[in-house]
Amino acid sequence: MNHRNFQRGVLAATVAGVFAFGIPAIQGAEAEFNIGVFTDYIDDGASKSDNDPVVQGGFELGFPTGVFTGVQASTLGSGRGSEIAPFVGYGFDAGPVGIEFGYEYFHYSSLDDEDEGELFLGADWGPLFAEVAYVAHADDRDAEGSRVWFVGAGHEVAPRTELFGGLGYDDPADDNGAKFWELGAAHATDFGTFSLTYASRDESGAQDLLVGGYTYNF
View 1 (tube, rainbow, N blue to C red):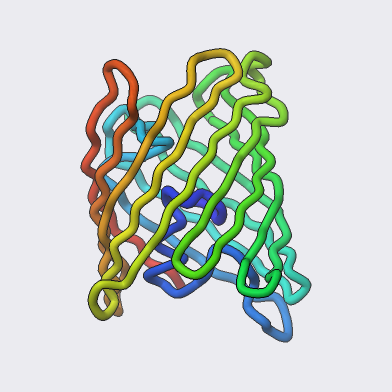
View 2: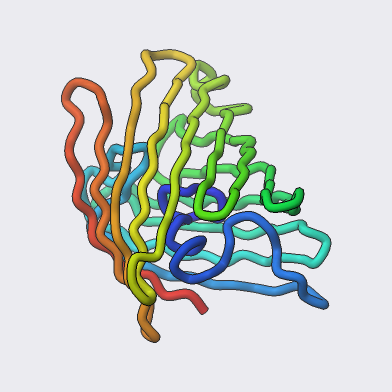
């Protein structure tokens, strides 16, 4: 869904051909918009929408200096309102490695004491990428200091068809940590990108999620 969250952004990085790190070398600002529908909202290997389908969308504005900013939004299922996440960051290349860092704020329209701001740092090298996010401040003070680590990769196995996967570790400040993972495939067409993703977490009571999606970038 958002620029720097690889669990959702990997499709943009590998299928759509827009690298998650690094802004295109353009003469002026460049805007990109996206909209999508998904059968569930995967967040760190768990459902964030109580297994309800969601609509997601947003835009990103990139500048030739490497600065980028934008906002992403998602419904959260029946009676749970929406998530709105503005972000700002800076991306650059260090030889073959792309690097980005920035800040993202998550606001929830109908959930009490859930808003939080995160700092993020990531890098990519060819088909490989890695990221860490740190909760700098939150309505729930116990959540401050939480971290999420993620590494993944994407590979084109046929024209316009990608396989992608990743492994992460959710390290909350106020609870035990848990590993999570995802594996999926995506196919890009002239009319958008279709995806299928399996995801789960290594903790008691975790669900195995199989999520279908469609995304259109313009």
